[in-house]
Amino acid sequence: MMLNQFLLLAAALFCIGVYGVLTRRNGVLVLMSVELILNAVNINLVAFGAFQDNVMGDVFAVFVIAVAAAEVGVGLAMVLLMYRNRKSIDFSEVDMLKG
Amino acid sequence: MSAALLAQVVPFERPAIDWHAFAPELVLLGFGVLLTSLDAIFLERGRKLTSALAGIGLLAALVPVITLAIDGQDRYLFGGAYVVDNFALVMKALFLLSGYVVVLMSTNYIAEGDYWENEYYGMLVTSILGMILMASARDLITIFVALELLSIPAYLMATWRKRDLRSNEAGLKYYLMGVFASAIMLYGMSLLYGVTGSTVLADIGEVVNEGDSTSISTLAIVFVLAGFAFKVSAVPFHTWAPDTYEGAPTPVTGFLAVASKAAGFVALVQLIFVGFWGRSDVYEPLMWALAAASMTVGNLIALRQTNMVRMMAYSGIASAGYILAPLAVAGDSVAIADESLRAVVTYLVIYAAMNLGVFGVIMAIARKTKSAEISSYSGLFHYAPGLTVAMTIFLMSLAGIPPLGGWWAKFAVFKALASADTVAGWSLAVVAAVNSVIALYYYLSVLRTMWADEAPDGDVSPIRVPASLVAAMALTAIATVAFGVWPPLVDGVADVTLLGAGG
Image (cartoon, rainbow over all chains, first blue to last red; front, side):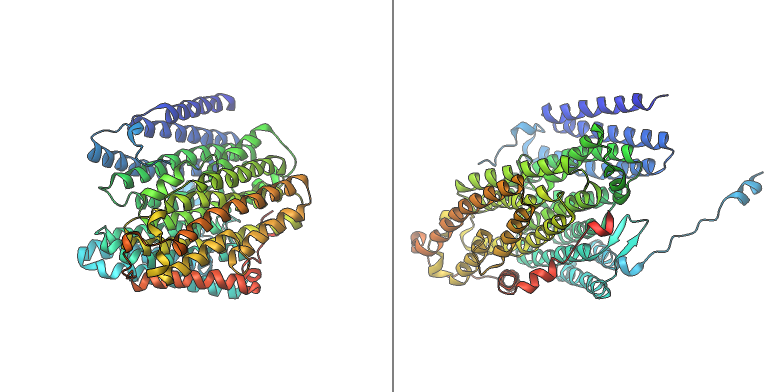
């Protein structure tokens, strides 16, 4: 087993996630893309922790998982709010404030 | 078998915890829980109490901060992951006091708007808890948790007017940019952990400063710093700020513009001074570019704003540039590093007073005009001379006119840049000086509207300002003037260092 394989997997997930956040217009898909980035982070942390025989990586990953759940909870609430007020979750329509 | 295994297990010993060092956080946590349970038990009947209780909580948390400051001893907890030193105490006091002013500003606004009061103050106190955690966080995990603890309630507070589409949009944009930036930052942190094998900033500093400049640690540093550049709304990560400031409820805007931004800077300087200080080849050019771009873009776009809140958003972006500027020379020597840190702290403290003051006046005027358009401010001097004078003090201070606090803030930045005596330092000082002149122009044009123009429709009925909002404006005005006319105050506040302690 090589550390590189894990890091490459994480880097690929990270790139897919960034691409998704930047190009997707659907609210739920944007949130899922953010989750992909966070999971790339978790893979990195756990892989580094395992290869260095250091428990801090696992601890960090647990914190990331827990906080990400809270973050996405708030995000889904906002998407729901948007759907109630506009009957649409297309982020490209959110453009009232400009200047 | 199992008995033999159990016998081998070392009994768990709780590490010694310095409860005094944790007292501010615990007091604030207690009041946050109290506010939430008050809401759950008394429901609507609790509404009258919540704002007072939040204010008392913030002031109560200030007491242990003061006793810790009198004690004057640096305290290191959890192997250096949590540090209570002068820097942390000054920033904690700043967060608590600016939080208190935000409570004063919110009291009537939230009560009269028929918003969800109990939850609002619970969120506010939680967010400030995250900020005072951030002031002591010298560890990647602690920084991450503190960042999310202060951000998640702030996302909700920006969206507080649930049925208002503009408030929805403000919160959504803030949230999207916020989670994206924190995800990028986390990826950087994971690489940093991989390179150094530790999450404590002091340990990371030892590995990074050995001159082992691998490209992966460069990438990690850039990602982490970019994540916080979002939080302080530096160009090119600023796009959320004007929309969020305009759409969010005004007290929340003041909170985001001052406390949340200061928290981003606290994390940034801790990372740079304790963690990455030896990698000045990476962060100095980055900070130079961010500072120059923020100052220039912020001021130029502020010139053509017609809405006061949007103008303050761009002025805030420009201020972020001034605060970032000293960091562009921080890595040159230990003396210059201390000088830059002092400049950052001075600017943050004075900026908090004058900027919260501006938002206080904006709220007071909006009580009558229901608008933040600059054109609606015309003739204000004829019917609200007190507010006009207050706004003049704050805007002149922001512009950096001598007898006021803002002058010391700008002076500290220029002094730090000049002390470096390098091409980078001088060129950035020139950019900052040119920008100060541009900023003076748009602040003056607002003041001209207020002092010289006639009131629209000849409506000169006076504005009735509630007592708590008057108190908020008075506190910030006194602080703005006091910092200007009494320099020992500035020196006392800015007597901080991070290098000796952490690196």
